[in-house]
Length: 88
Image 1 (cartoon, one colour):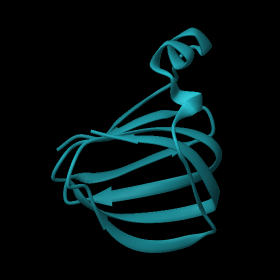
Image 2 (tube, rainbow, N blue to C red):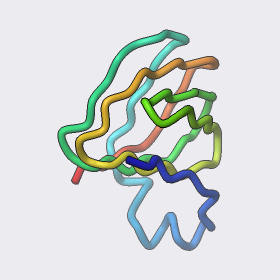
Image 3 (cartoon, rainbow, N blue to C red):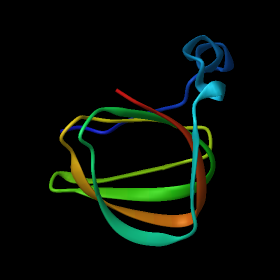
């Protein structure tokens, strides 16, 4: 299962309605997480590394990240992170 990371344009973010999505925050931490459904998120602040059985992916401010349904992983929040997110 692949985690997608890319830099979207402001127009794309607006057309997706990203800025109306809920916000999630985390201080630096390490924790296990699983995704019962797909999650799309836009990173407002911070930096994290997510490790899966297939390797690790890092992302930070300005990245749009898509986590696939069924993914199990370990999050390592390196710098306090703040993100908009949408499930489904």
